Amino acid sequence: MAQKKVLVLCGDFMEDAEVIVPFQALQAYGVSVDAVSPGKKAGDFCRTGVHQIHQKFYERLGHNFKLNATFDEIDVNSYDGLLIPGGRAPEHLSNNPSAVELVTKFASARKPIASVCHSGLILAAAGVVKGRKCTAFPTIRPVLIAAGAHWIEPDEAWKTTVVDGNLITAVAYTGNPEFIRHFVKALGGNITGSSKRILFLCEDFMEDYEVTVPFQSFKALGCHVDAVCPNKKAGEFCQTAIHDFEGDQSYSMKPGYNFALTANFDDVNASSYDALVLPGGISAEYLALEESVHSLIKHFMESNKPIASISQGQQILAAADVLKGKKCTAHPVAKLHVTIAGATWLEPDPIDRCFTDGNLVTGAAWPGHPDFISQLMSLLGIKVGF
Image (tube, rainbow, N blue to C red):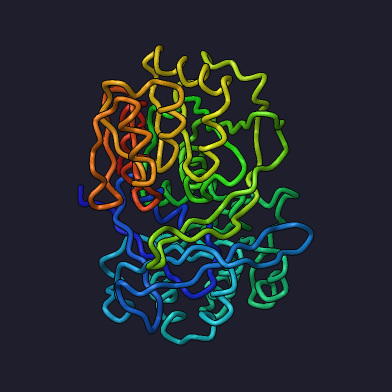
């Protein structure tokens, strides 16, 4: 069967997590994904926004998102589905005739359309919500109702996803796992082997994408996923950091989302988990100092359970003295840690390249997430078939 192909409709100041998580997760599952924006070409960037949700939301600058296709060259017939992130971008895309026409064409062809957050504005402009059940970020409820939609009130956690025929709608990035899972199903996907338990080792100022993307990608597959941090409890948050590549000698850093922990570090029973994931970021420098973290890592390594570590996460592995004789990569800033610890260095060229050596999966940076996630899926025996 031919590879499934999905189009993502982008715009400046779309929600950071609502574009990158499905974009990279779908690629990890074997789907070809193109991202376009009206008036922009392949290789151009869209700015994103981080909208932290409290009773209301406020915006910080997110990552710069690189488009990989040109809007004016799109042939709707070559795609199996459309995904539209939210954020502030839909406010101007809903007034862009080319963007609205694109949505209308997907709707007319009865192809799956996945819309989250404020992107319901584009659905309303395209006239595709009349008589349809849908949800969205609550502030656009009046527009959707005026456009003839049957409004479904979201739950308090804003994780609601509504499916009505080919239309899949969700409230916010907090509901990404269910949103993505329903979209995969609408594309004809079948997930197997996902009854796995995965543990994420977190700390303040871990890289935002490097925790959020794999965490939500594995939840979307149906895995049980926990996130823990030394000296913090379930329900508390870790602050994340956005690392971007903006032409400087090193990556830039900006505040990211608050990431919610799901379990208590002190209560972790390592033997109950099938895999361990270590995000990157400067958080790794501090986790590397924790003896309790070393013990946890050694359990997974000695039990030959999969460990997936990205970017600076390998600094923690080096401190735990589990890299001797291993082949691995990392972000170049962690090369010294890796080689001094006795590992054979694998050059991350290009930066999105990832490697598997036995039970160890390593990557250099978040652009490599599709391979990073798919290689861990392979070790765990998780498959997505279409």
